Amino acid sequence: MSAQHGELAGKVAIVTGAGLPGNIGSETAEVLAREGASVVLTDVAGDALVETTRALADKGYRVASCVTDISSEDAVKALIAFTVETFGRLDVIDNNAARTSADQDLLVCDMDVDWWDKTFAVNTRGTMLMCKHAIPVMIHGGGGSIINISSGTVVGGNFFSTAYASSKGAVETLTRYIATQYGPQKIRCNAVSPGPVLTSSLKQGLPDDLREIFRRHTLTGDYAKPSEIGEVVSFLASDRASFVTGQVLQVDGGIAAHLSTSVEIAELMAGGVVPQ
Ligand SMILES: NC(=O)c1ccc[n+]([C@@H]2O[C@H](COP(=O)([O-])OP(=O)(O)OC[C@H]3O[C@@H](n4cnc5c(N)ncnc54)[C@H](O)[C@@H]3O)[C@@H](O)[C@H]2O)c1
Image (cartoon, rainbow, N blue to C red; front, side, top):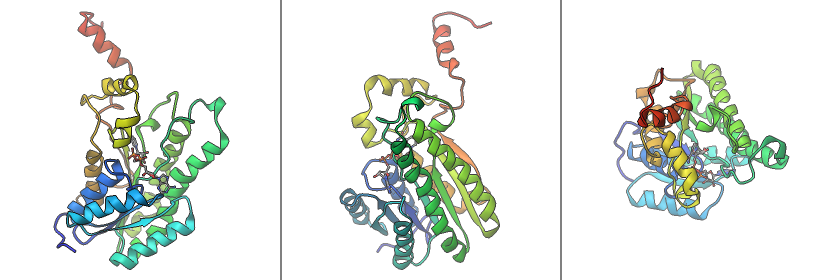
């Protein structure tokens, strides 16, 4: 166990969906641990989770792992109990786990109801269950910070990710309800809405032409690194964000900050056309 330094020293955090190396959850767990938090990494599957947690422990961070299916209320209760048994308290939860695959999640008229329900069971019910069982423990410890990971897919319509985006829209609403209901007991609740993030899975799975569309629409000119989401989560977890609650923070390289037409208008202007 190493000495804890940094702005999260003394705090205990859970990061869900943190099993895969190079993805947002594991990179966020590392940022929180770097800032001094004791971190419980969780995921639905065990092998990668154990490896990821061991890699952080080898760097001297105070971490533990617990396999959890967040759509199960009993499993979530067990995770919260494990965290308190292991590290003594709970201050921060980063609700990062999600069902993210888009292959069967296309147009509404083709929607498979089972797919829709399973997506909501993890992304929305799972996030709610984590909050339901973490909040009383956090209140007991004097307060806490909840960060729900949403998605830039919420801000406008598209041709894929219909169930996924709808489930994340509900997470943003839940965020404001929790902030309202438990703010007086010193629970802050915010959402982070990432734009395109180049995770290890996206590096392998995203077709080049689709990858290029996202790049063209990102004002910073490229995808985020997973740790860039972790840095914002770490800020919201910290006391520096003590007056921030009920917010959805777009961490998207500006993708939602401009009109969709502006990309084509910029191309016209590059060709010499001046808009009147
Ligand atoms: N990568 C992006 O571009 C991007 C963009 C916007 C939002 N996000 C959001 O960021 C978060 C992390 O995404 P990622 O890209 O690293 O994806 P990812 O698929 O690597 O991470 C999701 C993790 O959640 C886990 N998970 C799935 N079902 C679970 C369950 N029932 N219980 C516990 N864990 C479960 C998966 O095993 C996986 O490890 C997700 O909430 C995602 O919606 C990602």
